[in-house]
Amino acid sequence: MEIKARSASPQDLRAYLLREQQRLATEIRTRAVHGRAHAGYGNHIADDATEVFEQTKHLALRRGMERRLSEVQAALQRMEDGGYGSCVTCGKRIDPARLRALPSAGLCLSCQIRSEDRKGTSWDKTRR
Image (cartoon, rainbow, N blue to C red; front, side, top):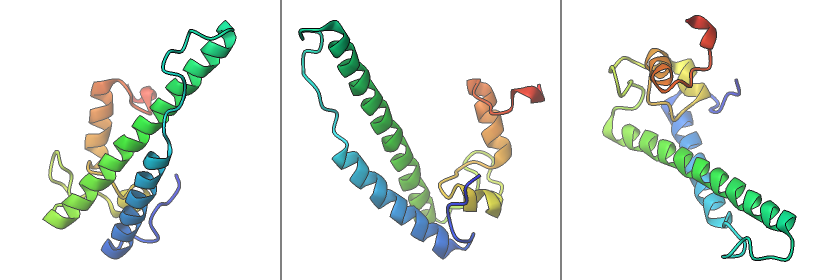
């Protein structure tokens, strides 16, 4: 797992989140979904399919960045409100190592795993 913040200190975590917020906002602004408004009216079906695929890919990437930006902004808001570092579900402290690796984390590891299990997206399906 890539470590995001230099340390688990509140200053380093906040600095990382602010940089990430700026990076994502800039990336979203510059990543426009381009293409013809009426894909499928071109001269060649393969060209149309490629264009639709590229539009879909760029839209998915943009939505992922928007979701990530929302998570970063929520973490910054929790810092302002004094709730940063506590699980938004159970209220327990989030492990500092988890926050260092994922500064926008709002769930402790136990609640994160339960959330993924409910969604059917758990990273470790062998636990069952």
